Image (cartoon, rainbow over all chains, first blue to last red; front, side, top):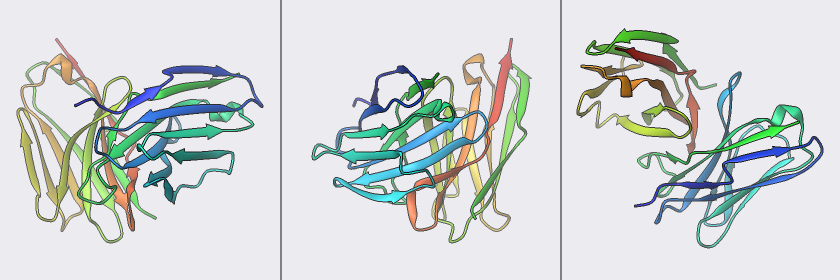
Length: 114
Length: 112
């Protein structure tokens, strides 16, 4: 079974630009979550999508948004990029996002904002 | 606020040694605790421990959960250089299973 696939692997953007990251979950998984990983803050939850609806949201500004499509694939968008947005963005999928369904992570997208 | 604390922060051992990694947690309405291994990019799922499954084993790796004392340990026996990684412990947020609170991780380096 293929794992969680994220594209692109690397991105370099300039302050003020916007960026879209993509995630394809494991086949049969309907819940997709996004995390930001930085050396200083570790892994932090951005949001979760289930059945094309945002089900949960972390403490990030509105510049961070996402969506999920009917095939469970998800995209994350960051607008008006800031230097502090440089991070590894990880997507994770689970069967249904419930407590007995562990998250499985993709390889991430490394975003560098200059 | 949920809290997960791991120790030690880093560890260097020789191949063949046995290591024990620690994770303590403070989570309202505890449901489960998860262990991940992160080598370069993706955290790879290792174990999930719950009230009904407080001990897990897979090959040289094993983990136990002590719900009374609110901690978990991850044991790796006969370590190999391929075990070098950051080991992360995480607990789901109350009411939001997909929102994991992660510890800072333990960086394990296995040398020849």
